[in-house]
Image (cartoon, rainbow, N blue to C red; front, side):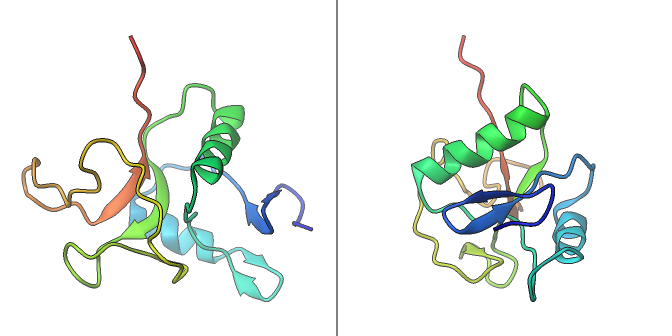
Length: 122
């Protein structure tokens, strides 16, 4: 069972916070919340079903999915080696195109963190 304002999915608790923060700020902010004896972490996604759940959770709070919805995936410890902040395995690979790509098409060529990005169909 999850605390008030949190939503359970497959034994894990999720909550969307409508605050504008950088990835590092969001990671620290999330850690301020505890679920039982554990600190909360930015979401890690391990299946299409969990991806849909997280999308639907955010979309139910803010229809249209705003930008900057951070997930716990990053390559801060080793460039190009993505890992989840909760230590779980990086076993879900349904990303847009060749994402995550570490910003190889951006200037500067550095993207260390991952966010939900919704592509509107035409």
